[in-house]
Image (cartoon, rainbow, N blue to C red):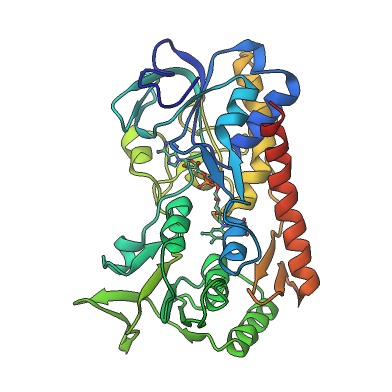
Length: 379
Ligand SMILES: Cc1cc2nc3c(=O)[nH]c(=O)nc-3n(C[C@H](O)[C@H](O)[C@H](O)COP(=O)(O)OP(=O)(O)OC[C@H]3O[C@@H](n4cnc5c(N)ncnc54)[C@H](O)[C@@H]3O)c2cc1C
């Protein structure tokens, strides 16, 4: 079914409605492709606005000229078609979990029996920094790539956000490919400082690499005040681009739906990735928050929760209780691309760096993409 058909997916009830073509839902679709279709041949709908999922881990590499722009894409429409699911090209605007209906931004309504959410988080750049024409949020990542690709040479860039995403983007923009002059880059870390939650050894390596590449670091919260970008008393002007990698915010429809949510408004789930308030609702990835432990909003958790979600949706469709649980590892592996042909590895207290780390990162990223591209292409 084509997503541009205004009535597609909206007639009869979907036994399973998957909202958002994120990193966990592609694992669910892959499970169905391997098993010959949705469990029990049920009517399944994938509601997601874009045809492609962009793998954010490869975006810094694209900026630095290590990958082509479209190398990090998964074709969701092809994957859904192979999995036997209908794709509806729209977005969830509201959810009524009791009536079991999702209302789309385009006005259509989709009734469901079981629903699963993997919509990611939303950008919060304007809410944190204030609005300005120079401000570019990394979320949604597709729009970020499109806008950056259209920008001519940049003289001075400020990156707001001291987490892994902000650090990688600062390195990438300093090494931006396709322009004659290297932009000057300032990384504004936020009041929490550089790489909060990372080991001292990782922070030390990143600090040295930033200094080596001439990237200035300002500790503080960036904010537009009267059209001027400042961090406390420090002016960050002039800047012809301000990139915000300031983490994700919960979509407003979660709290408005009455589903159990954490303090920040993310959908609360248990270790089965099932809503703690509504057993017919599941969620994974950045839109979800685990009730049993605090997890960073990182793609790695969406990826690893995917097969667990697939197993539990299978059980739920068979009328059984979910059995699979997602036990995140104690530490997550981060491979921070420094844009100059090298990368820094972080795994709990361990750190390392070198060209081999970047080669490892490319191998892991490309293997993930190839797995889904292969499944989608075999139509
Ligand atoms: C520059 C950068 C680099 C990063 N690098 C890493 C990394 O190396 N490792 C790591 O672990 N994490 C990384 N992250 C974080 C990572 O991108 C996110 O944690 C990850 O994308 C979350 O996956 P997800 O499945 O929750 O959602 P997403 O990947 O955001 O997918 C959400 C999907 O849902 C769709 N959607 C959105 N809203 C709706 C709606 N209302 N209705 C229907 N569909 C909707 C979207 O179009 C999209 O297809 C990085 C982030 C950035 C910005």
